Image: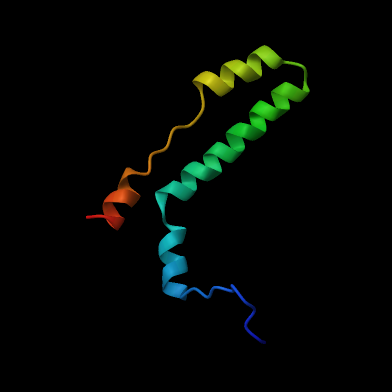
Amino acid sequence: PRNKKGQVFYHIKDVRALAHEPLLDKFREFKSFMKKVRRNANRNEKDEALRKQSTMAPKYTLHHLVRERYP
């Protein structure tokens, strides 16, 4: 196959390392949380959806990535 412009190749080792990144777990958790919020909003439970969104949203930080990139 020909290389397309802008196509990026990754080493298998890098993909395996990224698969164990804790931030990906937080993104999955946030995706499932937003699914629950959308379900509540579509069931006309707007107040419940707003409450969940404001108080129960999973938090994540990028501190460990910044420390890794800029030691």
